[in-house]
Length: 295
Image (cartoon, rainbow, N blue to C red; front, side, top):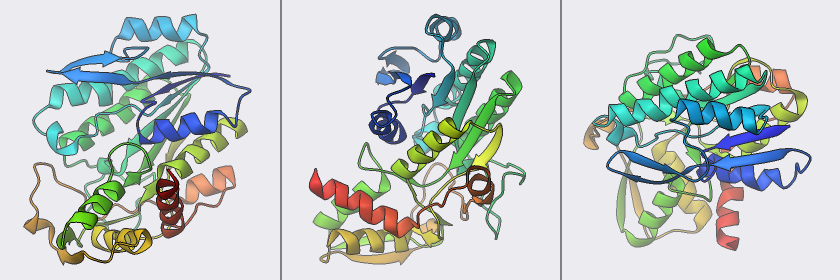
């Protein structure tokens, strides 16, 4: 297949590029944003916010599958930057889905737990009603709808709490803060499941090799944890002992965007469809931190 990967330099895109070397029988086209200045985006290979450019690129390169990892993920900044957020999270996925559909191809679109408001008390399934409570969540939800309106050949994967060795993420931040701070307050009343980007990238390749099944799927690592407990585990595994981590309420750390208080995703559909086992979050965290230590 000819596969277009957008957001190739992000956490997930970087892991996908590593796995591309293990699947050399496909041809890959990787693209991402090089820079952003005053709302103007500079792309490395393809401007996915340009409908005509997307259509031409997909047709000229005979793209069979798009893996759309690109997104505006600055959750708090999105509250005051809706237009750019919507351009990346809603319009671009629609352009990609429409273009690859005309080619008779397929799109795998990455979405988020933020499409839910976090008021549930049991893991969210793919059939649960979406109810975003932030600009980021609203534009990602609209992106899901746009993809489904543009093609029947879609696979939407919602994930949560993504981290990896690449880019900026919670694990790296907590390691950096833990190494230089004596005390650290971390929210304990937001519950979810971390996702190691490498595990998600592997799952995407399973779908590609077995044949992506149309529909919405959930994927994160196994288990349930709070941000506070996650931080404690990060420090323990990284050998950080000098930082006193204390639990705080969400109200003690106000942010422009609301976070879901509960965003555990039910992965039964993905596991049954593709016949895979998903690693426990702590096992994956150990692998990630181990990889960081070797770099």
